[in-house]
Length: 245
Ligand SMILES: Nc1ncnc2c1ncn2[C@@H]1O[C@H](COP(=O)(O)OP(=O)(O)OP(=O)(O)O)[C@@H](O)[C@H]1O
Ligand SMILES: [Mg+2]
Image 1 (cartoon, rainbow, N blue to C red):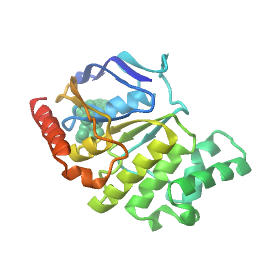
Image 2: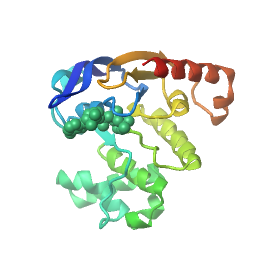
Image 3: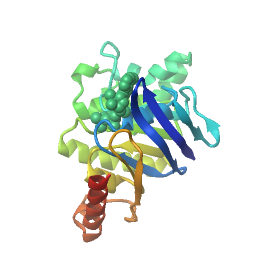
């Protein structure tokens, strides 16, 4: 379980996060929403071990996270691929940095490239990939270390609506097949309800925990569910909580 324990963050005099506690159970899909600037990205960076919390801590199965760890993958809004490396080399990069041998890298990357639907684009460079494909490659780079936890910061925010729906369904499938734990930041109420078991709502800066809403919709989720009365009522409930936050 990924556990946030009274996490607070200050940047100089700016209070970004205040006393945030919540759990992401193993295998859960949790979405994090809140106004711009409330500290969502900061919270993910703390959970990824990229920055240290000013107060409190984040633990994974009881062990505090102080530095980046292989069990925790992170995906940002922009794919941040290296332009001079092929898709395959970008996906392999975390393994190369760890000094994994070339044949082993190849085998692992091949499996991941199939998993993310980019097997036919392994030799292509980032400038030749569409936005959705580039984000898929970034997902591949996060998956190549087989993390048990995936932290995702508005991963589909820069994509057009149709690509976004497609990627949402793909991610849900991947999640159901692999049993990974996912914590995903989104600005979209629909996306939060569609994807999550539970939605954590933060207040405006300094981000505090406002409320948590559970989403008891059946799995697997289908796009048509978005039009159901149950979905509509959950979305209104979430919208109301966000406006109170
Ligand atoms: N390294 C940093 N140094 C100083 N201030 C920072 C730093 N990182 C973030 N902040 C500040 O902390 C606050 C929270 O930023 P953060 O990026 O976490 O918000 P966010 O919720 O992800 O916003 P958005 O929804 O727009 O992505 C902001 O006021 C930001 O300016
Ligand atoms: Mg952010």
